[in-house]
Length: 175
Ligand code: SF4
Image (cartoon, rainbow, N blue to C red; front, side, top):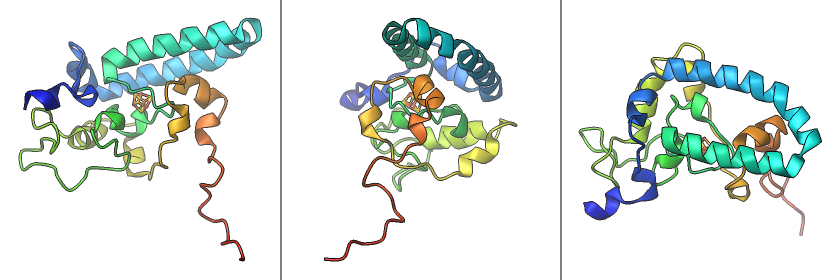
């Protein structure tokens, strides 16, 4: 039991569960932050691109690390998953729970914690703006974006790009 609670996915910042239990307010903060970021980042990028990237990545890791136990996947889907980070699922599942959710709604791997997908569903139902996005199918996470800023990746649309070789519609090659 004690080992599992020490997993990175099991960590929770002081007060962060209370915050995440107010997902509608958090999504309003997200909308506001996105508008500000998209207004300010182009200038920062022009003046000091490398420094800006470092500061933004550092700040994102600290703030979202405390609030969401962000694992810096670089492709943030928080607003689509009830403001609950899917990377805090110890199996890193991006599209709902595994078959191991316990009868009490707790995680198979970290029994001390609620399944993050049970929490994500319940929180998403308390959101008005993004509740419908809970039903979207998320693409596989691109591990090449690990430890990069999801804000910058969103602005640059890097998080929307399909890595080479991942295209599912590509016809099979003739031999
Ligand atoms: S950037 Fe990725 S790991 Fe961080 S909170 Fe968003 S979904 Fe979770």
